[in-house]
Length: 205
Image (cartoon, rainbow, N blue to C red; front, side):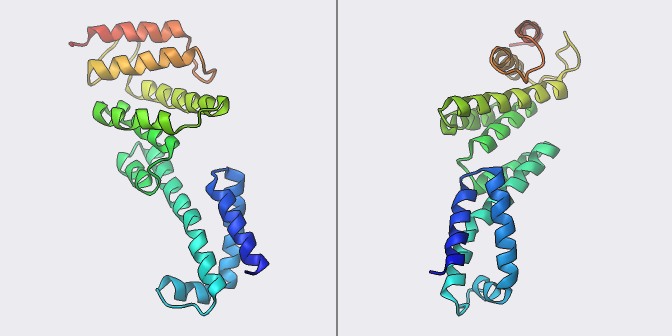
């Protein structure tokens, strides 16, 4: 196999590992390589032999990068627009990605969909790296997203009008209180979240 294709395969492997810098490098590399082999790639994608076994191998190897890019774009749209359908599309492409699972669960909590919260929260924790860095990343993402959920549905301290159920309210503030003990990105102290948790008791249950 040529050195160029070997380099492509190496960059593909790095990108699939999930590092943003590696992914950007892979995308730039493949973009230029694709321009140089546009005709052969078009044949391959039509299901026809390209006439170049190296091109066929490289296109196949580049598939995971294209899939990752498509999934990331769908998840970014889902997060920005609070759109569960876009998130579900991303998860269909990358069902084991804990960052996707966690965002989907957090959006479900915002929407009061407790069944979907359960469906994705626990797998997200199981799939996240068990290293100190992985745990920290998990807690940081969850803290940031759940504080956004609070800002979107809270109608003010002491009010319960924005919540769809007792379970939604208590789950949100139990989690935020715990996270505020661990994650500096959570802006309020544990006592604040404990007070919001107490407000939930006004909701029939």
